[in-house]
Amino acid sequence: MAITSTPALFISILLSLVLISSAQSCSKYTFPGNQAFNSCIDLPFLEANLHWNYIPSTRTVRIAYRAKQTSTGWIAWAINPNGAGMVGSQALVAFHNSNGSLTAYPTPITSYTTSMRPGALSFHVSNISATYADNQMTIFAVLGPLQNGTAVNHVWQAGNSVINDIPSSHATTGPNIQSMGTLNFLSG
Image (cartoon, rainbow, N blue to C red; front, top):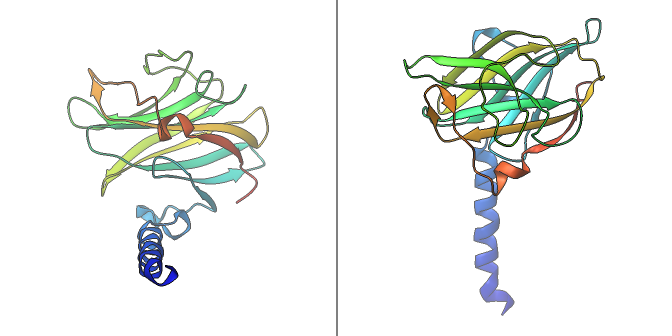
C-alpha cells in the first residue's frame, strides 16, 4: 500500500513546490520607476502583498498595496484604528472608472453596507495613486502621522465589479472574510 501511494504523494509535493515557486514573493518584487520599500509581507489571502517604509521622525508610512485583479474589479487596503475587522476601517481603494482611467482615493468604512465613496479618514493621506499591469493593481500612498503607534489592525479586500464609478460589494465567504490581521510597521 505504501508503494502505490508514493507516486501520488510525490506528485502532490511536486505540484505544491511548483505553485509556491510560481508565486512571486514580495521581497523579490521590483517596482517600476526605482521605487523601493524596506519592508513587505505576503498577505495570506486574496493574492496580495503589502510593501512599506516607516518614517519614525514623522510617524508616517509610505505603502504600496499590490493584489491580483482583473481590469473590471477593485482592490482596497485599510487600517482599522479602533478594532479588528472591516467596520471602522480607514480604507484606500482603487479601480478603473467609467472613462477607463485608474482611480484611487480614501474612504471610511462605517458599516457593512458602506457606499465606498471618497471621504476623509481619521489620519492624513497624501500622494495616493494606483497602477495596473500584468493583472495586478497597486495602490501607493503616504499615511500619517499615525496616532495609535506602529502596530495596527489591517484589512484588505477585492471585488469583481464597479458600477457607476463605485466599487460593488465583495464576496462574503472564504478569503474575503478572512483577509484581516495585525501588522507592526517597525517589523519586516
